[in-house]
Length: 372
Image (cartoon, rainbow, N blue to C red; front, side, top):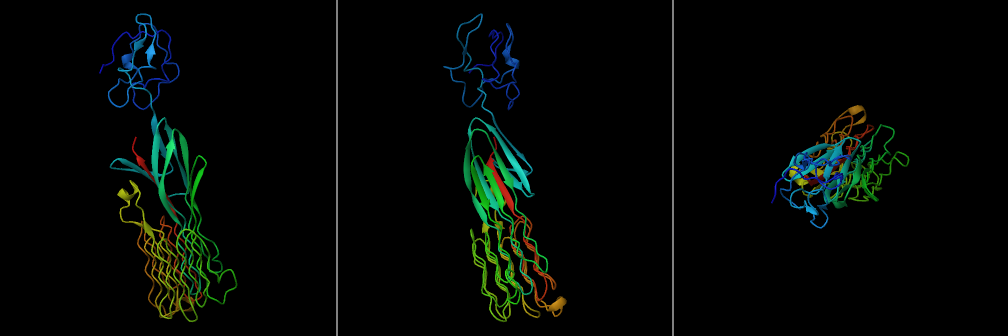
């Protein structure tokens, strides 16, 4: 294996699109034309390892030698540059893992080779219903891998959690979206939790979503999970049902306890599981209930806890506990259901009597790839 030598005279041949420049990782810019007598050893990267230049394509005709073979001296230019923007990159082992926690971002791929990308996409969680409401359904959780051959741009949108006020709860969580080329991967936002039966539709009808919202007290209309599980039901004089999680249906409310939210799911994708080894995503919110009783617990994956009290927070009972996750769901309080955990897709907890439920937790997108 040769090292760079002097006096590789190649006339006026422009080698900028053929060989890797001396500074590794950057292509030789247009205008790297070689004049007579110029030494190439200070410009181009020598062949050290990997695939050398194809000898049938890398002959040059020059003034001193005919058909000079450079294939055993220089490495061909094979760029593989992956540049994330708007996310938080982490390196673990052989992988770079980029977590997108905000609203949007990109990964630019400038490459002549193929790269495999592993992904986790979590939609925003649905809010909990008010007035002994059902827990919010979790955002959908999608995971897998895809291959990009050559150059492309990966676009990321992170879905926000659904927002509740005391008079409105019919806003689902927002979708999280990963797209590249002609492919789009969408994790659907979670369905809102239903309100007590005395409220007019659509408040008293739990929302469909990535995972379905739980029914409000004295109703049996549960939200349907499009990518995960359905919400739990309720009946007369019972607490709200738990919101659906990715792996478990929300638990039905009873006369003494709001239904627990369904549990979420862990991510098994290479690279992602190195920095989030035991983290759950997409837990449903716990159901709310009247005072002196017990609010439902949020599901694993950031579900908010259901709340327990009478009007204006009087006679509070035991508040539901938020489910663990990247950021745990909040516990219920006497005047409001707990919010879903940020960047978990957890559903909000159902509210107590004549009070609001909790907001849904925002989603997240995580992408891992072998570090070039």
